[in-house]
Image (tube, rainbow, N blue to C red; front, side, top):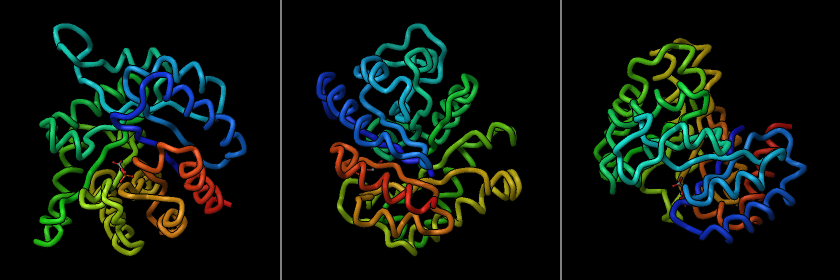
Length: 252
Ligand code: PGA
């Protein structure tokens, strides 16, 4: 089980430190779930000091694929690694929709993050129009094939996938357990096609899109759902903890 809280463009540094501090205290008994928080770039260094030595891991919301240099506004994988980041969210649908992220840029970022021994969380998912047009599998297979292009089996094994139906993100509408399970099963079958069954079985596939304490248990009970990428519900300790507890219970 891997649960990651994506704080998106929320919380100034002091608020981020406060939330992280509260989470460290509240989640100290979580043992069987790997979990992380992804504050803004600006808050990473301070939040890193708060979570160091605890069971809370640090994630970033994006990265640039180049090492360094004249790339105004961007943050390199080196910089993230330096402040203790372990997971990097790549190809989030908001990046794809608003900021021109493509399967090619996702692929470059994934390779860079893997080269520095961090874990990329590769986000995939269809829009409602694509789902209605029967293109779910077409979209997922293009996104997966693009993200994994040129990766070895060993590299693929060190990735996490987040299936996030775009129509469920921030809308309060969640995919049903069955809808999510079907998509997850398809993603796993795609990885199996590319890298074989044992790699496919070993990769965690998170669900994302309006995951909350009251629907988390049903989702994580599904065979191919191995965790969650949480937006809105990660902004309060209680709701994030509720999801962590649901994941913790599934494990036992
Ligand atoms: P949400 O966001 O939980 O607010 O729907 C999920 C995400 O964007 O990762």
